[in-house]
Image (cartoon, rainbow, N blue to C red; front, side):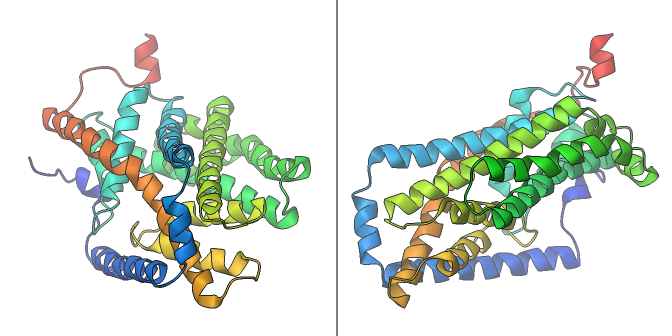
Length: 326
């Protein structure tokens, strides 16, 4: 099976490929840095991890599973106004993409293009527009959460209002923005992904839930290691972890290092420098491992299904909403 020209849309090449390979090497070095730092100090943290309540470990893994499902559901919600994609189908595609992002080059996005172009018959521009809409949910929710946290560090009613206000304003404005010629060129007939307020609101809600699962997972990890972090700091760490994990240079290492460094900067004084660094590197590694424990095994299973579907080629079922309703 060879890649078609269309399926190559998401494949890194040229300078981008070199940068991603370089990013992977740097990411590996960052992982080694985190592991070495975690092993060289913070013995108390390791002892607490060994004695951790199995229920807390299960809760972290449960948060990871909920996050994965929410991400697949975001792709379902954003495309729903224009195409009837199967919910479980998009969960499978999302799992494969998440798994392949651990590779030396980020081929996760390429796997989305390859599936939807080859199996669904979507155009490259349409898939690109779809991914951009999903990206808007990331930028909008993360931006609103950061702004609300800086203005009101302690979550509560005031924080919720500050968080919701820009999202509501954006939902109101999106139908106007969708009429712009540039947006129409990018979405190639998929403007309804932005103008259907019910489904885009659902996507925003799912992204907020996803962020919440990251925050809860980090909070549980901190609790296991005996780290006392304010809720606002935990939320900022979750935002940082989520955003950095999407960086184009690679999934591995960058997120762990960012969490460890930021956590050390946010922490209240009280621990020695080496113990502090080791403890927060343990936090970053524990949080990342909890996600990998779901993404990797489920991703491998989904990859078998993905390969069979791609090998079979174009699906014969109708995919557009109008076709399905006729």
